[in-house]
Length: 110
Image 1: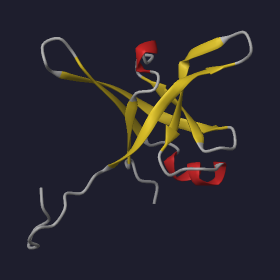
Image 2 (image 1 turned 60 degrees about the vertical axis):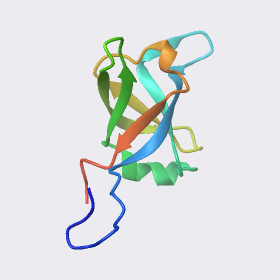
Image 3 (image 1 turned 90 degrees about the vertical axis):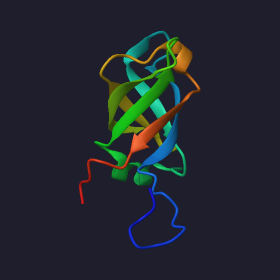
């Protein structure tokens, strides 16, 4: 998908890479309805404001060689190191911890 009228243009990626690092938790309890996402290139709390409300996709492959997606949305920051909280339509499975997610650059709030 090269841009119109330009030869050899690179395709545009409409997402930023992120990693599902685990669930929101305390010392004794784990809240699986809220996932923690570390976004690539985001290193402090002030940089997370841009991503609030953005869609998140966890893409995985099933036995029939097709891909499925679990969609979510970034809800707020988590801590001061650039991690965010996200809620997904169905909770992410535990085997997804450490897996890559796509943080879409839409919807735009600009």
